[in-house]
Length: 221
Length: 221
View (cartoon, each protein chain N blue to C red):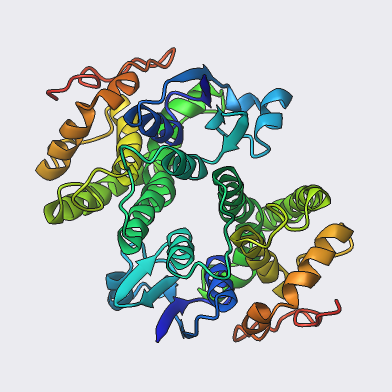
């Protein structure tokens, strides 16, 4: 059995869960209080971060490395195109969301509002929240621009780039931080991805002490 | 001709340059004042970051995506192992350096001391510099631990993980921020990598207004 050490509102864990589910790989989720950095957890991953995946006797960390591993060992259904240039575009977008979007939006909103309280790291920083609220508009517009050009974010097919983006947006949607009226193309895209069987476990997530927004699990939001 | 829009002391650009040189791909380097974010540059990369690679009619960004593209289109000499688990280890380490090491060390030392002055963004933050000086010790020890187990960082062969690490350390070495006496295995590893032909252009880098440390280009440091 595959095991994933994870935190429910981590976009990196959610991306891995979506890839696993899309490839119909069953996984046991183990909630990890990563911020306590127990010695047992640090033995699994010296970086002290989730996700950590145990699979086929291996202990893998870094969500990007894990997704590439899953794609290489379970190529069907494909979440990466075959062509090198198209693959570069997928990887550029995964980095866009996991690096830039994460820094400018997710860390400013989800981390300030939820993770800080959960880890008793203090109160949300108002300036950060304000920056995040502003930045998400730019990112939604950029996604809308991409989706005007193609069916999915990186081209005609669903790829791990869509899951990376959806992982972040679903965390933000949990705390009602996404204005779905801003861009119709983004809303349609999220409705499509939200209705996939792979998304079910994400929509069932509940973080103790933080109830999700009312529409969070609603397929017709 | 391949063109790389770059900044000499960016570890991400250096990683790409090392991969290009190791694969004997000639490249024209174009210095980009990325912090000025000209509209022309933003058209090349909406993320407003270097490196950006122009190759075969494509404009690629994100250093990870670029290196994977170069490996897929120019597989020899290989900088990634064949085995999926070994590839996951290479990618974990690339992320270790480009994410964790960058955040804890490079951004605290090189960015505070060099980039801030260059971009007129103010004076170095003493607390950041202190954190960076402390954190690099942990990272050098971790590298030493890896190098006690294998010839190169990710296993028996040179991989892009070694170039990712060397790219960061070479930027830090430029400003004398690496204590080469801390770990003999790391020093031996860096001496090996520094003497490769691929490293020559890195050692010739000069950033106007910041002279490199005396030993910077010295193969016998």
